[in-house]
Length: 388
Image (tube, rainbow, N blue to C red):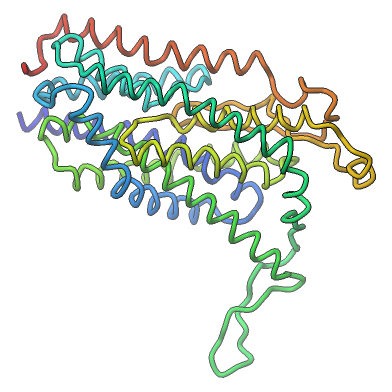
């Protein structure tokens, strides 16, 4: 029994490790790419805010996945290992094919399959989760569209700041006590904008913790194999380990694609998608951060494409848009590669790729569906689950 428990804990750590490796790139890639922060600092902040999100809001999601979707008695140590294996397998497939199969959605599918096989599935809870899966991308799309169509140009004029070449802050030793001071050519506006970029990335990290911590440890908590406090700490530590190791590559990958992407666009997408995800997590709904992120990007591109350029815009040169044709998001919370360029607003195809969106949506449907079917068949063949 102790050996199986160690295997279950290792499986949970593996899931958290991969979540940290992928979601850190989404949250901190823009900041690292713009030279606002280093990879090590980003990983440290990611770890801290993931733990904060998991310890507070994330407990609600742990409760839903651990005891809301199916009866807790179904989660034996063997059943927990099987469920976590399906979640890990889903991440491997997503990363291999570069598709946005969410770990949250895959986890729900695997647990639902367990519930079907043991006749312990709560259809009301599952229905509420599915409704949120439908509402979240629609909300993300329209929030992005409204900002892109009506607010983006004004926001850019208000917050767009060129970075100075030297350090942002220096230590002023002219007084009795050394104090931080603005670096050479650094303006207060640049400092405020940089602080805002970091704050938004921390918010995304908090949201990732709120939604993703449960994916790794909910079966262990549901089966009374671990208490919720140590389980959240285990998941956050595994995500942090992924942030400090394999995420360095994902942050570099995301950052290298941001040469022409204004940080403002990334910040808009982050705030909208993180707010939707945090709100759902507060209600205990396991939801994909990638789900809202992708559709917010598409909405922002569509809003920019549908906006009519005015004479004032042309005079100011405000006819460029945010291209999302190169966006690729993998797993929940996977890796986002956002391409950008200066495209004429009259060419919507340059601002979002309809075929890419269709591919993402199809995998959002196929991912949890396949996890449910495979989990159901596995638990029928392997009678390792508990009885109600």
